[in-house]
Amino acid sequence: MTKIYNRSGDVIHTSLFGGEQISKDSLIVAAYGTIDELNSFLGFARARIAEKDMQDMLKDFQDQLLKIGSDLATPLDKKPLVERISASDVKKLEEIIDRYDKNLPKINRFIIPGGSVESGILHICRAVCRRAERTLVTLMKERQINDEVLMYINRLSDLLFVLAREMNKRRNSEEEFWSER
Image 1 (tube, helix red, strand yellow):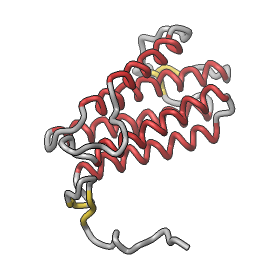
Image 2 (cartoon, rainbow, N blue to C red; image 1 turned 120 degrees about the vertical axis):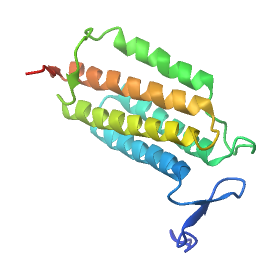
Image 3 (tube, helix red, strand yellow; image 1 turned 90 degrees about the horizontal axis):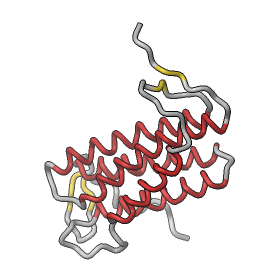
Image 4 (cartoon, rainbow, N blue to C red; image 1 turned 180 degrees about the vertical axis):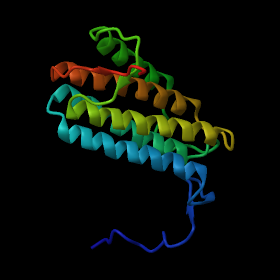
């Protein structure tokens, strides 16, 4: 029987694909760790959202996030074990954004996250996605990564915002707008 632990993680370093040793508190580990956190929250969203179209879409995002983790852990000068994120992946997100956004009421004020439970969870996903984006920007000052990763994460956060609004629409839950008092 294979054990979940192997004791190789009991040190302060980890390896990227290709063998480069890095500290476990490095920016690249923080970046793919935040991507993993986002993936976990998307799994939570899938568990709470009943609609098959949403479940399937969120599962696709989870698959892409695993691909991003692999992309980040593979230096650009190394052959990746899995296909890297590409411009066509970013384009697919833009098409989904456009498809859902065209049926939502136009807004010109900030929305207070919430409404339905499902929308609230998707807003959490969006916020974690934005944190991943900020971490990637900081990482890009330190090392070169696939530029499409940053674009994908940026579009994914936009899409999660649109999907949170879509879930409120589907639940007949009114959006609450922020107003300065």
